[in-house]
Image (cartoon, rainbow, N blue to C red; front, side, top):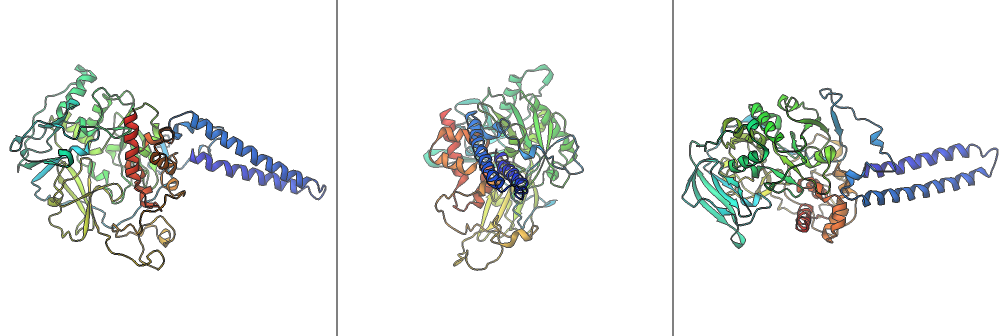
Length: 542
């Protein structure tokens, strides 16, 4: 809807000035024409305001997100009259979306596309807190000292016993760590030198129905790898998604290249897509990059899926942004999302009958040699970086916008394919906003970064300011390429206004979608935390 609103004043002013020029040209013959022209223009502007307000009320009264209601408007969007030009490698008939809003944060430390010799990682962990929707104290199926194979059940949710959370590697269970109120935070496994896999039974799509396939995936341990929107929770056993979405590229800072990750796993990825088609009543949608580098053939020619092309700065690679422009989430609807390497894992289960979580992880940021390594799900962070001198740095599981802080003895989060190291920002700058200083990543034009679009920065964690009054700006709208008003939504969450939260599109968002807004926020508001609190409130309300 923001695009529509942006186009209306432009059209109105253009039309008004056109009439003014035409009528003012007649003033040589009649001096009374100009006052009439001014009155006419004022009338047009008043009429435009009335229609604009009525249009906004109409869209709000329709319920659901603003994205879905933008099709029901008195005014056409200018974007409907102009068709963006896709890159030459994109089929002219393909669904192509060019996004203008957003911002690319260019940092030093991009992983080189080489696979380093993997360090000897001895400990891996499954972290129940990574999976939203399960009880904080799940039912354990193993004890400390027990031996497990990769794919053996470790615990299950007390509310859903059929959904198994399984071991990513074989070895000995050496710790079951607990946090506040005795909630289980980690189940740690000391891995064998040679990983052993539990042999899974085969599955024949032609001889079985969907409930049987769901039961098979739950027993195999794959079910928790699926995230259900809204709320980003593990889906229930009886959940049937409207559609399934997979983004095949990532535009986040120092994000891993999915073209490199898919190499050697093409057949597994395609088999995984086939399996996903058995789980949805709709389609499996792939988001492909139109940003210059041609996607891997495994993505372009992937069977069992519909392709959609996206061009634009971050967060164009976010699956939430792609869902919004493909088929936005309406009231009561559910969709599933998966990562590329999780689809490969599903292919391993279906083709090779084993729960093989081996994956490529990008080591990025302020380290000696940013590159990729091969490891397993939930690897120990300190052992992955044991060759690095980690002094006065912060370790982040994921990217610097939406990743989570990790200490040396913690573990990679379940869906993270990237480990980022950046300098701590514990130095202070006296009047740093007032005096000239070194360039830094910023969306503001106070620094001349916009003149050097390819300039990369070595970041630190300094926020260059403290939390302050939540002022109204248009910063967020320029960074989120969705027909949503994020600042109004955040204020609705803070005030616990459930109707406004729903009408302003909260169901379409996840933390990663507003992470860039948080980075640029003048008020230094914790937008990701606020959004999660709002989602939990809406989930409690049913």
